[in-house]
Length: 213
Image (cartoon, rainbow, N blue to C red; front, side, top):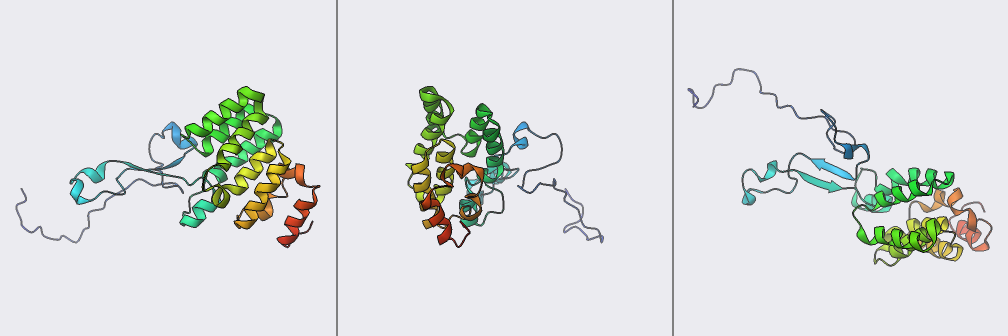
């Protein structure tokens, strides 16, 4: 028990030190867990949603804030952390272009982690016809989701492009245009969409975005 109540102020503040964090909010001090090498969200050492009704110590339990799936989703939410699409699509693209298809599929699985429906779609498609069929099943599964046209249209389009599905690629590029997807203007000139570069509908789409043919 303190001898002096209330304690006397001696002109020195008690410094409370907290661990430094990276751009995602994950702690960088000490031994890093394996998951931080390719994170899927932010792990907090406290409970972000704790309140006193849940008990005095509840806030000490950890919490987890996952990354948004796409750039469009994170911008709409005002989240400064990169989305899964922005983090891992580059690696998937590199593996795809190099023909390292198993590695490309592995990176696709990280875009929407713990999504059993998508994992099963990849597995089923791969069994049916290998890499391209796996991509087609993946795109079909994404396309069937209610939020796809508004939030995932560009992602669906380039997955269909990787699968060699020209008509479906053009269809979903048009949906991306209607949804004002931020990836669309620059994304369409990449090798991902080479299969539609000679199609008049592709040139019309670029004209409507005030881009050169």
